[in-house]
Image (cartoon, rainbow, N blue to C red; front, top):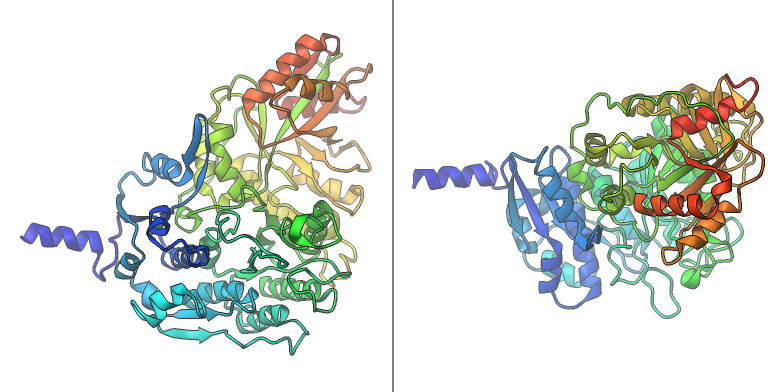
Amino acid sequence: MHMILLASTLLLGAEGGPGPHVLVYFDMQACLADLPRDTVLHYDVVKFVASLQGVVNRERPRLIMRFLEGGGQDGPINLDDYWLDLLRRGWLKDCSIQRESSLARLFELFPEAMTGAVVWDPAVPATANVAATVCGVEGWLPVRAGSALYDRVVAGGPKLPVKLDLVGRFKGLETGSAKCDAYLWAMREYLDKGKCHPALMAYYIDACTQEPGKPGFRYNDLHNATLANHDYYIANRAFFFDLGVWPDEAPVDDPDQVPGTDRNTLIALLRAQHRQSEGKRMITVGGFVPWNLKYTNHGPAGGKHEPVPTEWEYAALLSAHNALMDADALGLACLTNASAYQHHPLRREYRQNRRPAKQPLERKTYVLIYMGDYDSAAWLSRMIPQAWDDPVRGELPVAWAFNPNLSDRVPYVFDHIYNTKTPNDWFIAGDSGAGYLNPNLLTGTRLESGIPDALELWVSHNMAYYRRFDYAITGFVINGFHGDMPLAIQEAYARFSPAGVGMQLDFEQPIVRQTPFLRHASDIYPNLDNLKETAAQMARFARPEKPQFLIFRWILQKPSTIKAVRDLLAREYPGEDWEFCDPYTFFDLYKRSFPSGG
């Protein structure tokens, strides 16, 4: 009997929650299957549990969920099972797993769940994001007013005390927009008072639904709702928002506002966040423009601007305020359990493969495949089972554009790739270094933001990540609408990316302080059903003058596809004398192709 009581105490801990070596694995899929077939209730439950994760995982991993399906080498897999299985071979090897699937059980296991509720107003969908900010600061869990979840956990069940009720609070009296009023209230109550993280924000779609004649996501698309992403940002007390960027139109989810009110509100938030950072830190903003649902001319989004220009306008606003993206974009937007797995330890330094010996410069077509786009922690974590686990990996050199700043949210991925890399795996930064921004907007008038130059801040930010992960190449710098890179910014990149820089646009000089700069040749979207077509597309860039240097940007592809295309090019276009290079050899040969290149 004594041993049973002792074991129970160790399992549950002194306060009734799981003990220090127990990780609760909550089966969200089973939980939802046991609930009524109510997509709004399912949405609310995922939001509630992800928020609870953020609260209880602040100091150590205690609660993870089984939720996310994805692709593996042999077909569909559960990505949460994948990562838990891998981590239990190392970091979590001494941790006991306690499997649960009942929402009621979480209240028993985690006393924090009983702290209270913040009730958000479905008539003002932005209050769902305000509630996420409140949850991060106060620990009160978000519940939709008048909902089935409210009936289960506030009116009934554990009877969570309502600590803050947002219903009817925002009516557009300040800006003409209830949506924008809600964010400005949260800014004054939480951001301006220093209660939020000084350098972290979260741009995730609010609770606007997609119904006939209305914008927003469909509640049955819970992966792209990005609710599971909230846990990390709640754990770190980030400020949440969802706002449009254009000055010349009202967004489709708030058509009665004065055009540009969303944009002005976003600028106010970015300025407030900059004040909290005191201009001493780059600000990371998780999430991405919900371009398929709002703010663009795509499908139901109802705007007049194209998706890519909308992305670039958003990137420009961030850049002018010392902010960068961790860009969880549509399709692979969902990331689970980051609040727990952020605690995965990283070594002080990681080393890449030894730099390759110099090769003779010959009359060849030298090719570098930029393996992107990994400027999103969600995209990176979700693609490892498909791209990294490809059995062909290691048979040819690959430049993996894994942005090193993503190690903040998915440190487990970086530890895994360095532990399992082959001599042909090379790591470079993607757009535009240790985070996605437009570097040209770090100096000058900066869209009239009034913020001082931040080029030195950007250099020091990058140096810290590049040193830790032994990076020396930036594979793709995006400046959007903001022109070619001036010499001063080239010189800045040469300080932290001395072995090479790939460019979206042009620049003043091809070699600056012995650092080579080269514009990408093209994006390539392989036709997996006809790779000869893809080989022909790449071959069209070959020119008679040799040596020639071509960077091709591939997005979310596998080494096996590159190998197949490389073999086709060698067979179908042998006269071009193709050589697919590792990134260090490629940029070294390119530099030596100039008379003064060394």
